[in-house]
Image (cartoon, rainbow, N blue to C red; front, side):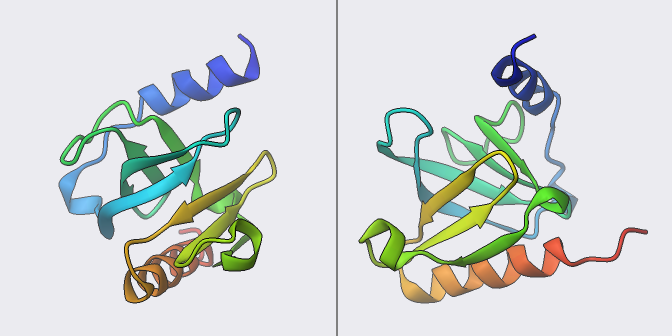
Length: 121
């Protein structure tokens, strides 16, 4: 399978269990190829940051970022030229996301950062 199809296949197998949800809410994300901004429902679990097209969906994410592969999560207002934006850096791609307000942005950065540095059990 081409890499993109492999990622889709991996993401398709992810089912989020309600007990695993650390934070969820609407974020606007920049699409990979067209660079368009699209609203997605994001769900953070101990291992993944997943995006879905609709709120309350918990299977077949449109995107699943494996947290242990993330190197950085930080503010990205300068990178995007948009307020309340932040970035999640992975080896394959930098994800740009926009929160609804500054406290929500800080919440996402804090929660994602804590999951990234969790010791592997």
